[in-house]
Image (cartoon, rainbow, N blue to C red):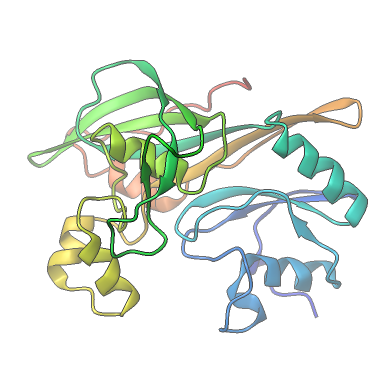
Length: 254
């Protein structure tokens, strides 16, 4: 039986592909908490079979567009596009601090952070895999005494946690980032269900503010472009600014 529509926000669907707007705090891969506790589980329930394949994936707390192939042939073709870096992805992010440059490209190799007690944490290191992220400043604003910057972010490579690592590397971690915000213990307490009131106050939001808002590629002799509006967590956070900020219009396809 298909799940209620509220469990899957469908942006586009045809015979070959499904594009959904994943909410924050939903894992992509199967979990131990039942079939509807993961995006792929919900996709399989929606399709009524197990042939669906996630072409791209997002971190648990990252919201936004995920492309799903409904069959093996489409999955292989779209996977090659993604591996060949011919899929353009744009993210909305909110980072700590005032980023001075209107636009910049962060080119810094990424590998495992062997000094961290968080097993899944990465870092910039000279022997890491090449990684490049372009960022464009949208607005700089204040909430109380703190300064933040909203950004349009375009990764040109697809390393694990790439955007989060690169923003932390330049001294402007994502708002709400439990791993790359500067204190590993916040994440360790979170996974143990021991987060303190002080932890949540420092994080400011339940899930980090990163949203995959556009996806573009050329496939089967035509161009495809999808967008997904930012979730309420973004608008609510920006509304706390003095004066309130708004989420800028989507940038055009790159």
